[in-house]
Amino acid sequence: MPSVVGLLEQHELAARRRVDGLREEADRIQAELAAAELEWQEWAIARRRVDTVLAPDDDATAEAEVTEDPRDAEVQSALRDGAKPKSQVPVWREGLAWSVLSVDYQRILTALADRARLHQGPLTCQEMAALFGMDVVPARVEALRSKAKRLVARGWLAEQQPGRFTLAVGVAGPGGGS
Image 1 (cartoon, helix red, strand yellow):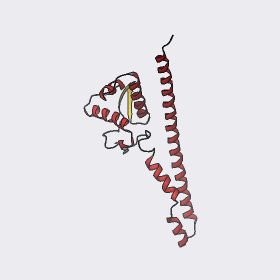
Image 2 (spheres, one colour; image 1 turned 90 degrees about the vertical axis):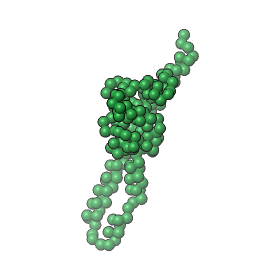
Image 3 (cartoon, helix red, strand yellow; image 1 turned 90 degrees about the horizontal axis):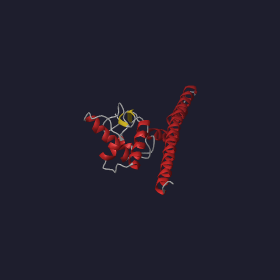
Image 4 (spheres, helix red, strand yellow; image 1 turned 120 degrees about the vertical axis):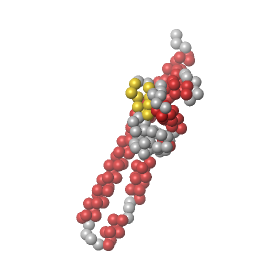
């Protein structure tokens, strides 16, 4: 007969997997939304250009052309910011600062950047837990693994060997993403 603690651990693991899956789905949807907003913005710009080319030359048209739709500024701001700072892991791109990530993710990147700087190679999640002064227990290690896998999926880390993480090519120094 399974123990109560064992059953609780099984339920906790199942719930954690569901939460991770839902977070990944939310991140995918957010990325899809950002791409759709970008496409919408490009079409709006194209429409304004066509309007400018087809409009008769008079001062009223020139004034209307300079006046921007306030919604365009909101979209540009949203696209520039990407995900809300520190709430999610945005897809890495050159020049993206580490400060957009939560402290936990920055901590992982810093540890791996230090390893890369010292030419020490990849880290496992157990090694990271020990390095961070955490109890090296399955729950802590799995939490780190989940974060590391999310960083891999977003292009911040690389996992050339299963369970061994390094910074992705192009990602360097905590001051920025490149």
